[in-house]
Length: 71
Image 1 (cartoon, helix red, strand yellow):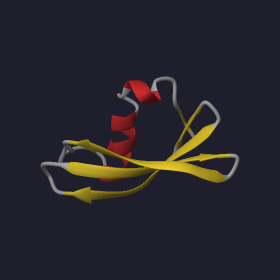
Image 2 (cartoon, helix red, strand yellow; image 1 turned 90 degrees about the vertical axis):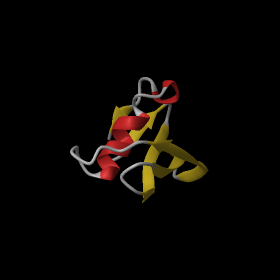
Image 3 (cartoon, rainbow, N blue to C red; image 1 turned 135 degrees about the vertical axis):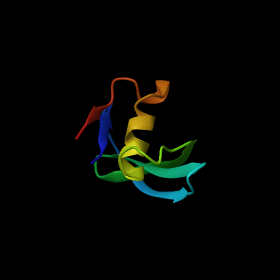
């Protein structure tokens, strides 16, 4: 699972945290070259999908990822 936007491949590389607070580490790749990495934080749901899926779902709610598509 990953996202694509404006020619960049966006991948959640890992998650860390607990049931109250989660940090997801995200890499941005363009033309097969890693451009940057960022961290995003959110409150996960214990009754929803796994934390990786929740991370992608959370990213898609942010303005920065408006128009991103699943790849």
